[in-house]
Length: 352
View 1 (cartoon, rainbow, N blue to C red):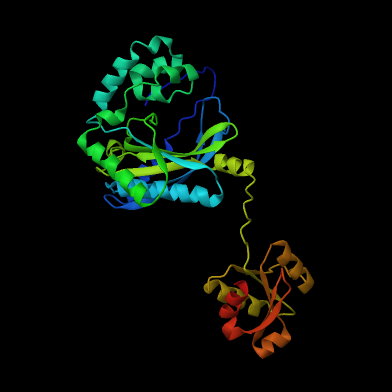
View 2: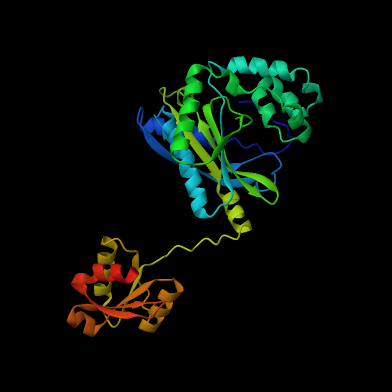
């Protein structure tokens, strides 16, 4: 990776690349294993943030280690697609490409540099810097004039080796089988040379143009480059703040999570019985709690309502003597008296 220090008298922060760090963690814990890794980390960028981007943001991602087959690539693409669709992101499209491997990429680099050599002088300073270091990134330039100059550039897809070509065809077969619409975009590239074969992006149309909300790809050589075993890997990342801003712009309201299924209230000196009931409900899989501050019964109900509890379960002298609990739906005000021995099933029925 290139080291650039274009600033003076400014603090210098060095951070391990998020994907690389999660990969190190994986192969140290589960060498040669097939598994999924989850990434949730703060990310910083030095460059001036573009629209929809932040100087500091948080990235969520998933990675699959140990799978060579393109079915793993397809699984992650489908997972990201369904996750974003389920959240309410509209007008999603899947774009895929293959950037080859160390066997076929050098030939493409030579072909691309030959194509660019007569045009690079007209391109922006960033492209001129990338020309020698990583010519693939020239295809990723956002400057309109540069995009026009590379519009007829040769495609990596035409120079893939047999293995990469078969892998890319396999990926398309899996996506076709899942009935997920996609298109091939030979302009999708990656700035880091450990990426191999599959690269993909999930894009949505907005008032300001297309917006990439998720990006990923395969990096079969990364674990070995970091000192681990030879291990296939594929993953994706998405900016959490970008997704939230997108949902907000589309008017999607994210429902608040239910803090409590049941809030246990009690009268008199029945804290121990209430505490026991809370544990019983938790063991049955419910989100349950009680008051620990000595509130009055009226204040307990008020607090349960403030916390958004779906149900309240009340214990008093009569309930304890009869072996029952009075359960109330806080929204509909419906009340039921349920036997303590059958409380889990009764709560489950009331929750629907």
